[in-house]
Each structure stands twice: as structure tokens, then as C-alpha cells.
Image 1 (cartoon, rainbow, N blue to C red):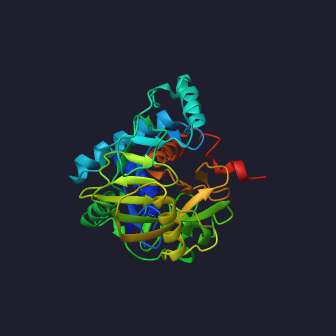
Image 2 (spheres, rainbow, N blue to C red; image 1 turned 135 degrees about the vertical axis):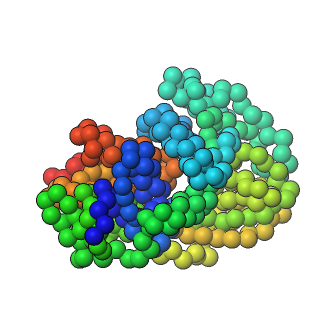
Image 3 (cartoon, one colour; image 1 turned 120 degrees about the vertical axis):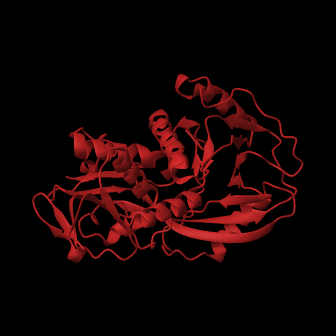
Length: 348
């Protein structure tokens, strides 16, 4: 029987972030993943410290960015890939009132380092933006697909990845260890995303799954080198390709693309840009969101070696590394979890 410190179930952004905590602290682990959950694979990959709908800071944004960007820098070296693309985010203003709200927000100490105080005038004839843009600083994009593919390849090379369905009924739990598939571990961490709804140990958590869909378009005449946030977001890729997203759907929780989502995105896109484009791809995945917009992190009430790392929502590239460190320090160092992410907040 193989002995490790941890079994990890799920290898999306949450699972990778926790594995990186384990690697940094010389802990041994194996991963089980059956690729059934696709929220990470369809993520736009943006990291942005500001909620652009309300011009407010993202929760713990400075702490999140510090931990996340260091992790991705380390991974670029370890995996020999390019992951972090520094790119500004432009928020399109719909009115003079929004401009004024931006100026007010940019004067606040907590936002002044992230919101540029100068309005950027639009000079691109392919974009409808008569009131210009506000620029968000300290932003960028993580190439999530490259990250997932490279990390899985690394795990396979090290014989650490088991690509099959995790059968909960085969998990044996004892006081100081768990046993599964000829593996003994001190702890098991479930980082399954939406799949946690089938997990008998944590399916009582108030996860609110939200399906999201993205388009990839080819638009040779658009010519933008920044992320544009308006009714949709536009993320430039190489070769005049752009990601367009994203939708929110709470009833259809499949990973299948829909014509309705495509029409919704195209309707918003056509109000924003005025140049020819071609849709070349469409993807869908179910995000693990939570009503209070905070992740689900912590230990099982009765089984002290079972843990959950979930509910990253739409900001997984930023928040994943932060909450993974929180969980590691909780397990290994006995430190308290932030009350806002601790699953204990839902226990009556």
C-alpha cells in the first residue's frame, strides 16, 4: 500500500493551488480526477482586483494577488510554460455619471492603486465608446488551459494522477488515516468544483452552480491590446482571436453549449463593436459559486481528516491560491481559517 500525506480529488484551479502548497512544503500527495468538471477549462483566466460593476475592491484583493502571482511565476519555471500575460483592463463608460463614479472610487485609498484617474478616450472606430474608458491596473490573464494541460502532464510523469471516477463508498476513514485504492493518506481534500454536489460528505454545503459559456471570435479589424469590459468582456488572444464572455445560467447545468447563450453574447457584442468577426469556438462549464460570494473551505464536522476546497466562483485564478494557503495552514499549522470562507459559517 502506497502511503502519502494527502489525497486530492479534483485538479482544476483549486486542486492545483492546493497541490502547490503541498509541493512547497515537501508534502506527498496523489490526485484523482476524471475531467468531468470543466469550470476551470472554460475560465477566461483574468485577475482583476476591482469589481467593475460597482467600482469596489475585490475581497482581500491585495493578499490574493500577492500569493497568486508568486504561485504562477513559480509554475512557469517548474512547468517551463508561459502562463501570466500582463494586460490592462479597460472599463467602458456608458455615461458621464459612470465617469464621475469612477473618479470618486479612484480617490479612495483602497482603490487608488488599482484605478487610473485619467479617462482614456476611444480612438478605435471598431468600438462604440463615446464616453471613453477607465483603466484598471495590476491586471492580467492566466492561460488556464496551458496551466491545466501542463500540470496534468507533470502529475502523469510523476505517477501522481489517477484519471478515474472517485467512488466515495470505497473511501475508508479511520481516526488518523484514510484509505482509498491501495493508498493510505493522512488527509483527503475534495476540490471537485460543481461535482461536490455528489459528495456524501460535503453535499450539504450551499453551492449555487452557475453555468457559463464563452465564445472565441476572429476579428482582424478589432485591433485591441487590452481587455475590454462592457456588457461582455473581450480578452485578446494571439492572431486576432478574442474570448467573449460570459453567460450565467442556473437551470441547465450541463457542459453542453447552447444556442441561447451564443445569441445572448452576440447580441451584447454587436452593441459594442462595429467590425466583421467570425465565431470559431464555443465552450461551456459549470462554475461552483456560493450565495455569499465566498469560497467553501474547511474540515468535515465529524471526520477530522476530510476537507473541502471549493466555491471559487468566477475569480478562481486569483482566489484559488489564497484559499489553498489558508486551508494548508489550517490543517498543518493549526491556524484559524478566515471566518468569511470557513464552511462553519453555514453550520447552525
